[in-house]
Image (cartoon, rainbow, N blue to C red; front, side, top):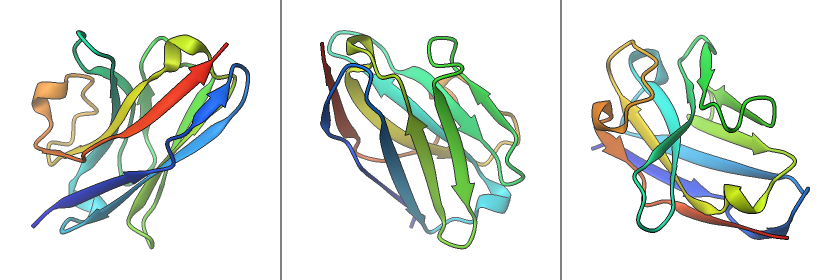
Length: 123
């Protein structure tokens, strides 16, 4: 059974940094593409960062240059390092996985989802 558990969400001030973690069980990164999405009330899920087991990555346009996704195969954990956070980054951040090799930014392509972790950025 695949399980994704996010952690690290917090309330921070504008300009600060934060690192999110997603611990995965029931899957191996060799066969899955992992992703971070985020969602605010009333909006659909937005792709933040995608990564595969060989550390190929792709980012959503609004976070390029500020966020970095990484993956630890030994800990079966992916990370999202967020810097220069802005109030518009406030959202629930979700970890997701799918076993298609494509680094897709489309949330509907992802099979497994965590419950999310809240990030709030105050001005």
